[in-house]
Amino acid sequence: MDWLSFFEPYELALQELKINLRGIRQQYKTKGLHSPIEFVDGRIKTISSILDKLDRMGLSIQEIDKVYDIAGIRINCQFVEDIYMVVELLKKRQDLEIVETRDYILHQRASGYRSYHIHAYYHLETIDGMKKVMVEFQIRTLAMNFWASIEHSLNYKYEGQIPEGIKDRLKQAAEAAAWLDGQMSEIRDEIAEAQKTFEKRQSDEFRVVEPPASLVTLNEDYLIKKHKGD
Image (cartoon, rainbow, N blue to C red):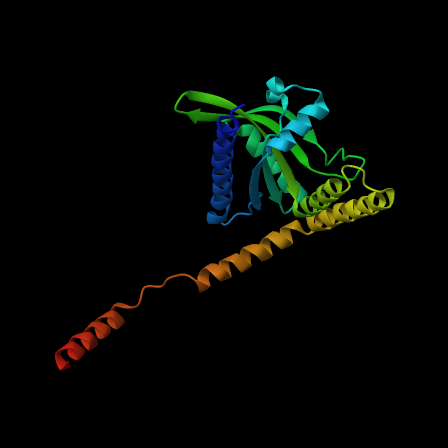
């Protein structure tokens, strides 16, 4: 199999989506509005991960298109409410064809995992015409993402067989993360207002200010006299 050619459309799709989503965040910031998007990241599954998944799914290499998470976009949000705002933004995009949505926030997994997943075809324009590229979007709060990253590391370490004692601790941590998200949602408006004030202050501190015309003239006169004196 020509893996280089296989991965190319996935890589191009991720590049375009990351630029577009970060652009949306910047538009909110430019207008002085709270952005539901905090961070955007993406990844392509490794060849070994793809082959392992095909094996677990009982599929052959010819059925690789049935693996929906070869390309993944992760969108981190500050608040749970932001997640659903991002979901609506994605659903309205003309270049995305939604195939499936999974709300693991309202219906969290037994492990405690919470996130919102969307499987969608991204319409990628290539020199050979439009190509549909399957992408998985994972939309989470920062607390959800922290927990998921820890669980992923432990699953890797224990090869999917996490000891029961650690599983119990993970569930407790998941409950704590959910409680934290709830507390942040209750004071969401106050947090957003404080962040807006802080960002404005930073912007004012680094704004380039044109010097007064009189100061410019004075400086020019000084330089002319200095030059004549030299």
